[in-house]
Amino acid sequence: MTGITHSYRFCLQLSSAEIGRYYQGVARDICVRAESGEQLRFAARHLRPFLTTSGIRGRFILTTAANHQFKSLKKLG
Image 1 (cartoon, rainbow, N blue to C red):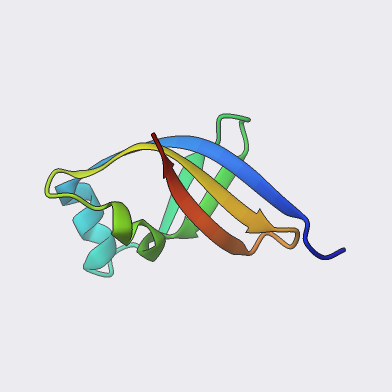
Image 2: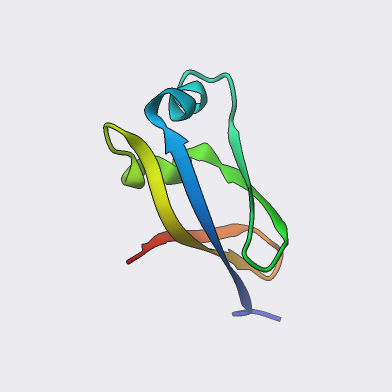
C-alpha cells in the first residue's frame, strides 16, 4: 500500500548540553514517547532545524511512511 503514513505527536525538551552529545557523536538517535504511548526513535540530525542556543523545546509531529521510515518532523505552534 503506497501513500499510507503514520503521525506521532510528542513533546521534547533538551538543553544545549544534552543536544551537544548528539552532535559530538556520543549518541545518534533520539528516543521519545508519543502522546499515544508508543516509543519512537529517529536520527538526531532531524532536529537540527529546531536547535536554538538554549537547546530544543516544543511539541512536534513525526510523520513516517507505512514501513516506519522517516518522512518529516514539524514543530507545532
